[in-house]
Length: 268
Image (cartoon, rainbow, N blue to C red; front, side):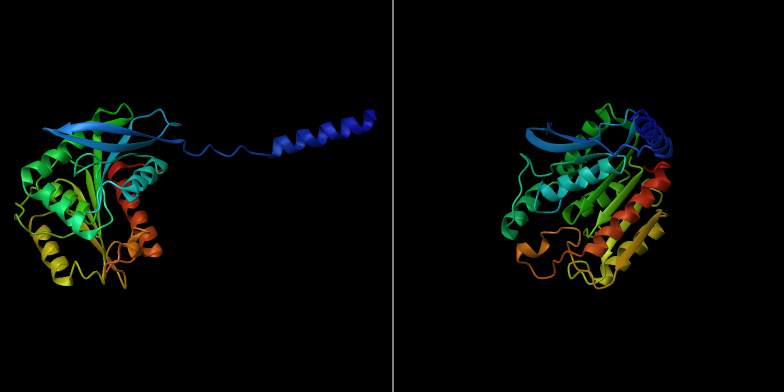
């Protein structure tokens, strides 16, 4: 009996010595944040890895024209898993969202009727993000989807102090014109080549204007991919030209993380 116990102890010791502990994964925590721009109450959502104690880059997430929904919040969570602090912002007020195109159009038109208000709401969100104790306020970025893509690209074109901007199936606007040297952020445009809402001529005009302004940018077109390719619920909205594409979703996210790794010099 003593011999058996001794053998068991040796086996257990050998197993323990040969086993390496797996590194702990991210402990993603989230919370809702209420903030204001003028008289408008805005409701955001922040996500971070609570297992980390260092200050890390903060990334704004600007929602599709549907509003502040679960798609936007999920991107903030994914950013937290990747080692960033993600803040899903509210551009419409009161955290409003919808699944009806007419209502989405009305929300978007109201939010963009005054360009100064659009800029102020993004600035208010950036201020909140920078105030978070986990964020290195000197290292910030923004990503946006559809409507949100146009918002973050507009901020970059206006010279907002962001280190990097990524647009996923976002509108590519060329007005107002961008001044030479004005763009400070590194820009990544992730676009569906078969997106009927962003025709090839829009991509070409946008790219030519950024190149003339001396901006650092990259455009990636995914063949056969339509609008809203990052949203798993795209087909449920009943709109032609919208379709989720798992491969493009995965590859575009990886491209964004590569850019962030180059800009911020970090990875998980």
